[in-house]
Image (cartoon, rainbow, N blue to C red; front, side):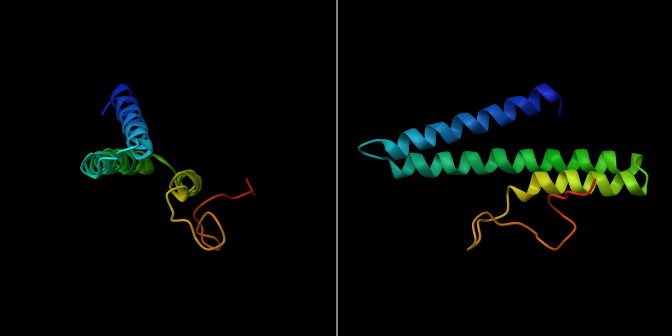
Length: 104
């Protein structure tokens, strides 16, 4: 997938999210339309995640061990925003090697 196709995928997902917000705010909200929009957003999100892991898997063999650790941190930060919200606010993988690190 090219960069322009990825950008189009991201923008399409943003448009669908906005359409969903508009529908939710409508006086007579159509739950069938919301279901369709939700499915569309899920499909776009899954497509984007698949492209992300393919990029990672293709890039990883080009890195030495230290670079692979950095790559893991970068992708961990990106994926940490997808973690469900926990009881203390935004969730994360604290105590593991994924997510944000302050020691560079």
